[in-house]
Length: 555
Ligand code: KIV
Ligand code: ZN
Image 1 (tube, helix red, strand yellow):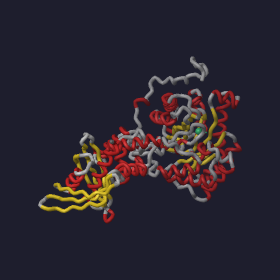
Image 2: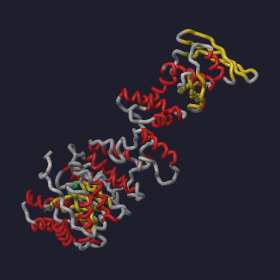
Image 3: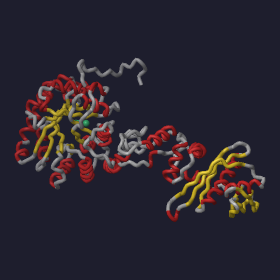
């Protein structure tokens, strides 16, 4: 990097718009969506989609609910041409969906593009030429008047050559893009858009689409919004114009730029699923649509099976949706941090059916987009006790007493520290079993029986202590008390039982009891033990053995 002062780059000039309105507005309506996955997205792929893949992808876009889909650049490649022909010839385009085709302002390309549309019911002819000073100077070596002439002549050719197509029944609409709009002087962008509109002669019923692309993103989103508001207020035939947005993401703010430009008055949005596109990508339509949804505005697009959509996308594009991608990324409904896990758990429990969504850290109900609750809490060394207890309860059915959470949390934390990675629910379960349920040394229970007389319970327990078998007896007010007293006759440390909780694990014939017993040793140590058995009494005796063995292990 250049050391300060940075002279290599220049700030983007602000737009003079003293009366700007967009900052005081809120989003209240859904824009018209146009997917450009099959053109802008596809042309950015190292390995472009095959015709079969494009057909599958087109079907996906239709299923999501797109009514305008840019299907290609048919004059640029035979594959694109063939794909469009198959869509039309095989009647794959629903009546309410318009296919959009991109073309440069050259007569032979325009006629070829129109040829690709033969038999289509609804189509949008998308014509573009580049307009910025740098494009005019370096690429076209043309002055402003020549650039305007390229656009108007192209529009005339579209009008002229599409007459037969329209006469044959195709409803043809027209879109013009001054490519590199956001780097173009606004007065010149206005001049060229007005000139194209003069030629096309749109009506209120059949509006022209003026697509104002941020071909490369150079400025902050507020500047983009100013540019769009400036155009919206200066166009002479706004009532006959749909203002369309087409942002790219070079500064990582393509989504923000689109959202602010919608406040500035735009009607339509072009973008791709998950933001695939040249360089840093096109606008991610999924995010903008679901952002609207989480504001209470239905986007008119259906992302209720986001995992299925992601699967088709990844297969056809051979790209991966990053794990942190909003809404669709693998980890976005996952909290590793203990305090987050705790807050999610508490607010989720407080969420009333039908009430506005209010779960902390999760701005959208995962179920709305087909994601599962299961994967929400996952465990690594940053996780807290709440997360571990959540996994043990939701994956394996253990309802650990609250005071036990801290203990097991520490055990799992140590394990996560040692492994240095995320732990699976099975690993957590395994650690819980080793720590509590499989504690048979130095004390191991071999047999236990009780009999009750005059409200006193007598027990006889066959145990092994450090490998030596002993038969112990004791009497108490219940089996637990009797066993504790029986152990009191040995050299094992003395302890008292502080609390006892049990519940059933599993259902029907498979059901077992699980007991959690908290003890306090004579050295003042408090800790839990746990035991499982089909017999509820034995489950609690095993829990005592577990607690005592744990205390001896700690000693
Ligand atoms: O990014 C862009 O400017 C384009 C145009 C062709 C609309 O893709
Ligand atoms: Zn683009």
